[in-house]
Image 1: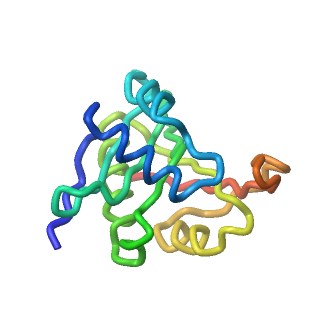
Image 2: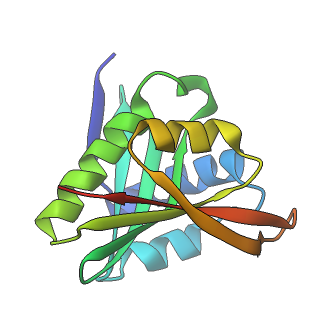
Length: 147
């Protein structure tokens, strides 16, 4: 398996939108992914296996704070270290940009994701009530100090 983690290019938009639909009930459209790609305060990394996009992460950053807005791995590639490698790359880029804290929100019921983030060094840091729609659900706020 030759997994590559790289910065997103414009030609990745549709592949990311496809994975969004697979992973999330409130999937971002190709347009919103493209808009985010064009923002100066955002960066997106993709994981590619044999030319196929198998994961991505969308990050917003302001000063010393980074927020993971989206991260997903193709259902056929989960539990193989792809997410970990994506987060390694995200952490490196954040460190280069002077980001010292990484934040994310995760659905309260998403135990698999919460466990994964904790194993990566994120700590649960509060609840955002009814943060998600479709379905309505609390978010668990998680944070990790970098460096």
